[in-house]
Image 1 (tube, helix red, strand yellow):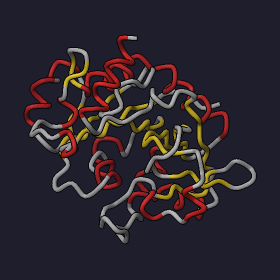
Image 2 (cartoon, one colour):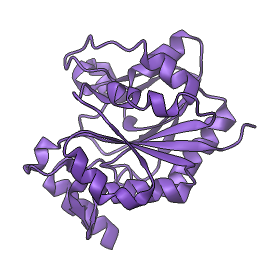
Image 3 (spheres, helix red, strand yellow):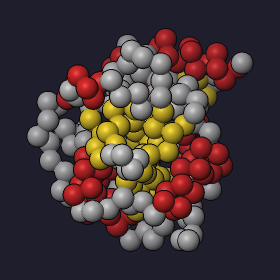
Length: 245
């Protein structure tokens, strides 16, 4: 089995307009610490060899606030979607020999053990892409995980683009991935922005892998709250209750 070495790539460029504040989303405070602190701490505890943070909105403030954490900051401007965000790390990571674990700076409750399990399962399955998924109670507007009868992931469909049948799928994308480095950057070079948002979606790497005959797997996080993204002030207070419980 390959070594479990991995680098964490944290997406933290978003403005977070639904937070109804000018503050960059990852700087909003949860239980006394900014959201980004939690993603960094989880990556460090899970054993990341290197941490790269993609920043955009209020980039200088994020750099200053986290200057002591030893991570590499890469700026994304303009912000053209999650696929475009990850591509900004190509110069820093293209020669990296381990795996890349893509995390979200607004998912503060993720446990280091879940990151480790994602990496272990990725290696055991000999997958090229592994997606961390969960099954939250409906209704919700998350991207759906479409699989074949052998439990291989075929594609991730954004809710807005999903058919009525696809909307009935319970398993959803958390936006967290484990990917082989070489595959990641070659696949991102093939992603286009032919979608409703005119953005470069990171989720497209799944279909690119399938077309190339590569294996894509999902790893289901049993606690859907652990992988919940913070998009609103209400979600922030719910996360606070969870942390203090």
